[in-house]
Amino acid sequence: MRSSAQNIELKSGVVRAIKHSAIAERLFTALASCFLFLSSSSQDIHFTQFFTNPLIINPGQTGYFDGNYRIGFNFKSQWPWATHPSVFNYHTETPYVDFSFGERKIKVGWMGIGFNFLNDEAGDGRLTSRRFTLSYAYHQAFDKDHRYILSAGIGLSYEIRSIDFSKFYFNNQWIEDEGFNVALPTNESYQKESFSMVDLTAGLNFGAQVQEQVKLNFGFAMLHLNRPKHTFYNSNERLGFRYQANAGVEYKINEQVLLDVNAYYTYEKKASEITLGSMLGYGLYGKSHSHIEHTLYIGAYYRIKDALSPIIGYQFKQTRLLINYDVTLSKLIKPAKANGGLEISLVHVGSWYKQFNGKKLYCPRF
Image (cartoon, rainbow, N blue to C red):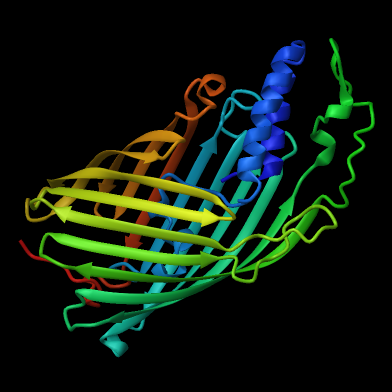
């Protein structure tokens, strides 16, 4: 979810486009105020493809995959209509990498370590967040086939936030029938244009292969355990505890068709979000016709009271590309013209060995 400063930028950008209409300006001010109130209690970024960046969702998923390493990248462009037509008005990029190790010695479990970098920039004032996160997890199997696995993880982040207040437009600079005069004083009492903080996260994850065709996954994480200070002003404003829960079901209909269903819930300071949806994957055999090398994906996700997002994708062996586009359904549907934003993810899972035999996750045979 976007911060209150980002919503101020959104307001200023649209008001500039309609600055010669005082009535329109007042209407948008009222609308923006509602969103400021709703979003002021939550400061974190959200992805429709939450399941493609497990290190952000839950540190307990660090190293939770079949292979030795995983490399991923997410890009999100939000509200490309906000200030001027561009995918970089509000954009987020987050590359990550995690490794798993210890499965050959531990036998009944393994460990994972990962690194995630997040860059988020928003609006005219370039409200910027740069976050560096290191995460660690331990995965314990409860049977020799690794059908049931419980994971626990922790994450430590260092974040820098900055903003350029000189790029903003404030009410004190508004002149009726003329527009904004940036030469006028803003009368704003901000004390600094950047600050940094350390953030602590912990999470649990449980995976189960309940049948040959059905795999379940449940996760719960708690963010901002240390409740770091989060303000550009000399106040004691702190982030609230943020709770995140995710669930997934993989149902292999047959050797070529897979149904993947996912759900996500988060709550912080009375602000909440629910996203759910599914994808259908259809596998195509390679030249040898012995195993599937290509998979096509199609599906849709829905963020309740916010946006509907069709999604398509393609996977070649262990590399998957997914693309979705958020179609706004909230009260912003008219000014946004249903234009929510583009999101892209790219994930590759690899192994140090030609044939990985770590026996981490149970692999059903058909």
